[in-house]
Image (cartoon, rainbow, N blue to C red; front, side, top):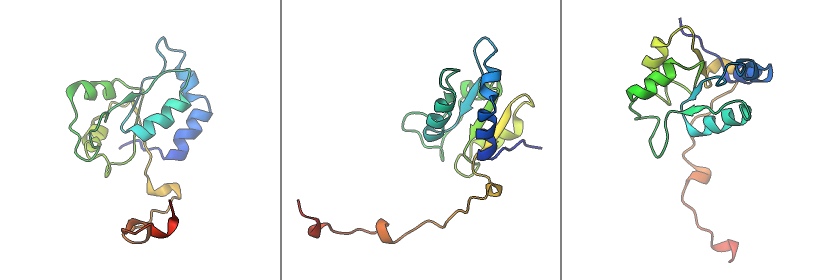
Length: 136
């Protein structure tokens, strides 16, 4: 059974000193994060404790990312692995199923968090429009 923690649980753990407690180890907690926006948030929470490892870096897309053996090892050796969702990062499905029990999996986009997902917009501000009336 996969251990899934919603976003609220992730921040509750951080607020409760999870990262601080894990920092008593020589190198601090080993946290691996899939994408840049989440990495920035986690790095802010972990500031002064340790630096999380980013999986999908550069201009790579989480939708088509191919996991390298070195990244798979980093995830398996982590204390915490944080992803957005299996749908956004399909490469994480098999990774999550094979995680050692010692690695805490945090999935941020879990429907049980009380967040209502809206359908993707295709009109309004997403349609082409002109700005002639806005001046210079």
